[in-house]
Image (cartoon, rainbow, N blue to C red):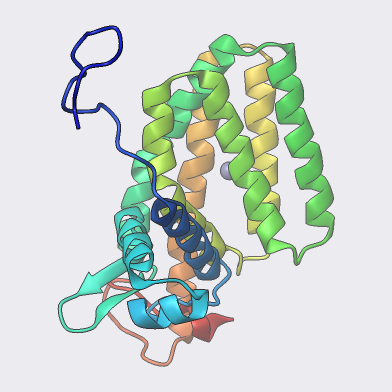
Length: 258
Ligand SMILES: [Zn+2]
C-alpha cells in the first residue's frame, strides 16, 4: 500500500530501487563459478552450457543459471545458437585481433593519464605488482598467477588514471582479454615478454613523460596482438584440419592444444 508516512507527505508510488533478491546473489555466484571453469578450461571452447545440467551440478534452480549464462554471452565468453543453445565461445583470432586494436588505444590512454597522476603510493603499488610477477615467473607453470598479475598491472594503471568511463570500457573487455591471454601461454616466452614490457611501461611512467608512457603501453599491446596471431597460425599448422585460408578465420578447439 502506498499510503502516507507519519509526517503526512505522500510516498511516491514508484520506488527508485529494486529489491535485491537471493536469486540475484545466486546468479552472481553461478556466473563466477562458470566463468572460472571456462578460464580454467574445465569448460573448454565449444562445450555446451546446458542450463538444466549446470543447475544440477551447481545444485541451484535454473533461473539464476539462465541469468549467469546470459551474462557470459554478454561478456563474449559464451555464444548462443538457435539449435544448440549456449556454448563456451571458441577463440576466434580475428575477433581477438580487433579487440586488441581497441585495447591498444585504451591502454595507451590509461598509461598517459596515469602518468599525469602518478604519485609515490601509486608508483609503489605498481612496483609491488611487478615484484610479485617476477617471482611467479620463476615458476613457469603458474599460468593463473601470471595472468592474474598481468591483468592486475593494467587494472592498477587504469585505476590510477582515474577516468571511470575508460575503466568501464576496459572492464567490459576483460573476459575476452583473459581468454586471449590463456591461449598465448603456449608460447613459453609470452609471460617473460609481458613482464619486460611492463617494466618498460613503469620506467616510462616513473620518468614522468605521459606521451612516452602512452607509446610504450601501446607498443606492449600491439606486440601481444601480433603474438596472438602468430600463436594461432602456429596452432592451425599443427591442427588436424589445416585450413588453408587465412588464419584469421573462425575458431578452433583449444582442448586439442593442451
Ligand atoms: Zn600486459
